[in-house]
Length: 579
Image (cartoon, rainbow, N blue to C red; front, side, top):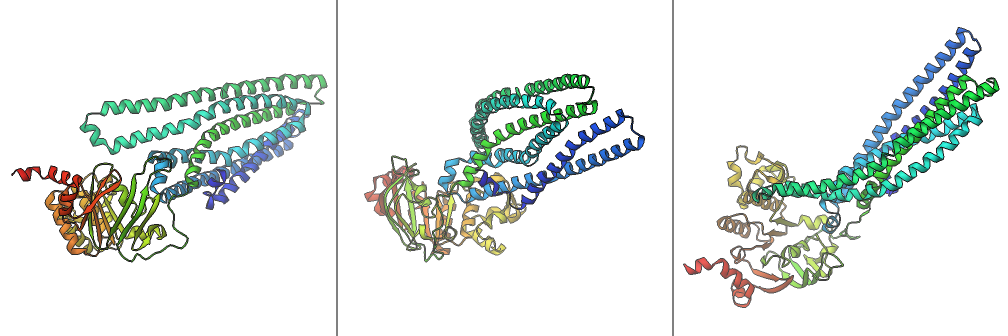
């Protein structure tokens, strides 16, 4: 896990090394200052001259300035390193997610990936800063302060040897109880984010069904659960402060009591007032270091759970990868399904698609009809290799899709979904997802084919109209036509319309199909539809039922031999027949 995360440090290695180096220098100087102060107090007790005091004073000021400079530089480099590390980590996570197949995304869930990119990265960033700064400072301060205390008085330094194990055992108890809670709470964060995501994206549905109060209560329950876990963890961590205060006060009292007795009994030969004051300072430094160590352990224990979650994503291998020697040229838009079986997970007892055998010639228009859950969308996702078949093969242009370069394949297979997404930006920017180099004239021509130019021209800003996030400022039919135009700009060899004209009227649907037939005759067109009128003019129609092909034929052939197709057709044309 650590090795995986450290790969994201990259260009910030220099800052990550300089920060602890300056911290080490600061610690050394801070540990020498009490020693020099003790010498100064001893000189004053012995009745030294003013020049001696000035000399010691100037030395102490110089060392304080050096400590300040080292501390400031350490803080600067630690900030640069931790923020840069977090930036790279987010980039690497996002890049990893972009390379995932649908099955990989299904494994982590959208909300889980969002939590990893936000909350988990922030936790790891804070932990990294503490590791390269505070985690270096505290052990060094602990060691140097203890060594200096031994130099001054080996007897008195034994008090530190007693209190350190007590504090260590207390911290071990606290961390072992708190860590499992932090580990489980981030999974509940995923559920919380999922609730937010669902309700924001489905706000219209929530309001349409007047479910605001229900959703608020559901979110409140999830939020209370997260709050409860954090409260339990914080109650355990709260023991840290009183434990530290007890050890600090005990140590100060012990040093003051036994130190004073040692000065009096030895006549200041074994220990003097200046050395006692330096021991008190070293005691404070040691205990403050231990206190900071406890804070580091708490932060690291929180971030370990986050780090593991991030490492899971970075270590995940996409289920779909390019072959060793990929084919980059796609000959034509012909498609062959050969004995295809497909299931979404290996543990599934039932196939989503079974015994699919289908040939589609290049340039053909093929309709696909079937009930909900019949496997229509699953079938077309195999063509662009969004999923891999479980058994059998899918060939495009005579070559197995698993042998193609993924980018080359998907550039030649355009898919327009029923719920396709428009991104925030102008209409032109959205259209150029299909072709970044498309001219204004070409976009207008394509939009006329997709029956989108008419409504675009009615906007005050025309093709420069800004589309809000998710396309909320255009209607469902307008969004679908823009998505069809975007897909056509790719000039694909295969165009798949997955119920993507469901929000347009039958006249517009017919005009779009007419434009396809006239303008892109060599492109293979696959139309998934609920309306038989959308596919009745297709070269052939595939009827799916329960993940298997029930019938294949033309409109007239299916009316005779397919009960499912005939039932759908009659139910949709009942009014026309009666008239």
